[in-house]
Length: 408
Image 1: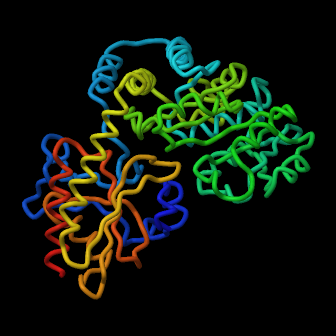
Image 2: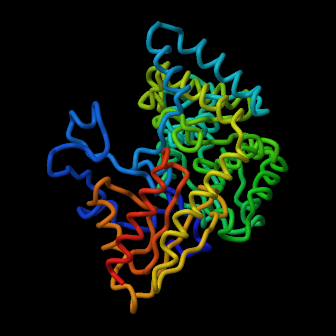
Image 3: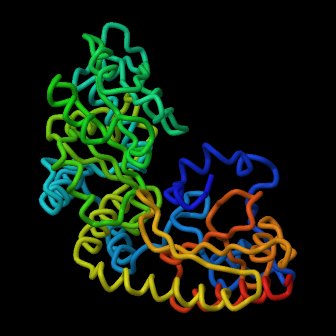
């Protein structure tokens, strides 16, 4: 599940491939002996909820990322007045579109909601009767063609609309599967290396056959260029998570693309009633927050940020590599979470430690630390540094070294 060449594991891949998180032994918030949360103050301490250092990444189960301070400020200001959601979505969508090169953009209540609304746009369009009827899609174009290897847990968001998923394995099979009921072609970006069909080919087939295309790029920032790359590649719709690298609201997503399809996606969701997307309400705070998050993300010094991550990886690697039987290696996942990470590996004959025991000691220690999900059978720990705050990487380095040294 998490060998070096599979470093692009994302929240989806993890949930799909490792069933442990749905089991009773999954991550459970722990409370310290004195009832205080590890290193936290304020609301979490009052609630008795334990916080942790995020050495994993932008996983939803680990509450994503931390809001950028400017995003927090914007959301606080947005919460202090009433506005028209339609006007706010239009203006904020226009700002994001102008910044990224898309025709239009829509803020959603998460990437899964973006997938659902994108599908509804392609199936029901702006037809009032069709919008009211879905997920009853009888008489509508309701087939979505998937690359077979791209079936994943989140395709439920697409099936919610009443769409029928048609699987194909090659470009030729995709062309053959296209018919009068085809509503959309779907591509899962982090699975680009699965199967013989590339993202470029799917975009090209959509243009050739005049069928809308949607690419799910939920966790595929950085690089920052991806905010524009898939639109430029020819995709009609692109979906991102807002609460990952963008450091926007955790319950936000971004759908960008063709103006007519974005307008239809909006019409199939909130604030309108009797729509499939009404359950995915997005508030004024999230709309403003994600808009500000995109602007901050585009303006930041990405090279300097990358250098900082590299230095943190090097620091942790140096702290553990001097221990007998231990080695470390820097790696960058190929697609999702494409930032510097550290893999710590140890010789089980020298270091008497299982991965599960290592994870447990980090989790139950003070402060608590969560690491990147990986194969529990391998003597290997993967650490993501990019969601750590301040000098937390030094704490992670010291704790990892102490645990390994005590087991050697």
